[in-house]
Length: 455
Image (cartoon, rainbow, N blue to C red):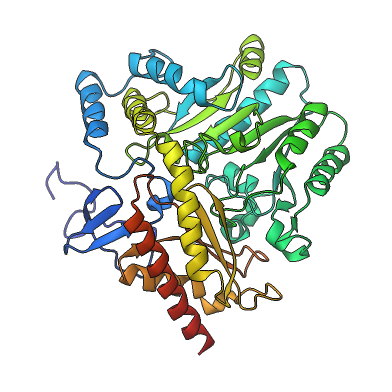
């Protein structure tokens, strides 16, 4: 072995540790609008926007140009040493849309980092107020907040938590705001706004006076439960409980933000303002790994006066990321795509409901904007889920993929193990023809999969 030859050389080569094991994945080579092509020339209609990420569509040359222009100037400076013009320009432009008063924006590399940053902001805020005993954070069952250990612990998605339970346990959970399964103990679900608010208030009281730091929730639950909209009155009631007890309201807008639900942010449907917010996915539309942790002006000023935030990531405050996000924002504005998400979402919900609403194994079709969920059940009258070992949702995904349709799915929604949901989140540029194809192909996939399981 030569002096320059790496240790272990001699025939061994690296390989990708794929997110999906045991299945060969096609190699993507091109994407445009709502379509992705693989190396064999096969086209796939991306009805999920990847992981409900792509909002302005694939293949936007102006976004690539914005990234290239900034990269030619410089790609990286450390956030403790420099700020940058693209970053300053972006935060000024996006601030008017954020559901917080006088927002201060901390850019990171994705949703999990944004949630971790939001939690640390909450801790720093209470330390600055000389309330160090506020260490309790409350989230909800049936939630998803990310895959880093802190974000996973915050999440109430049991199939993802289960392998790592020995490392979890610092956060507590109240019931999911899940009207379809309200009252089901196994689903940890309630469907009445007053009951949900009262339960949160009781959890704050049980934790002890001055002990709860924050309540964290998704305005509309995405990946875990499949586009579940809370009962009317829920968000104003929960916000009032938090304010009354000095508890910070942290909104997880990672999936619901930047137009996905037909408003700029999920909280906008109820006119509620957060104290801290996490966003990602639609921030950069899949063109750059980017997330935002955002503090209200009151939270930011308190932290700044109290000594600052002990926190940081190597790739935070990225100038290239800011340039990309600014162009995504401009496309959303220029093409009125948030309004398009609302109207197209209503149309997609109608098409899917018409195609599958009477299917004996479809329990619920729901959502807001271009975030549409379908809950599959073995028995509509009892809402009994298919057993996990039936792998029903995997069969639906497979049939759809074989027909050139890409979906997003969830499991364990009914009791932590059983339950299947399909989530639709296509780019906002989806056409009428493509929406009709989504509904029809999805319908065929559900029919084939449920027939196989029944057989």
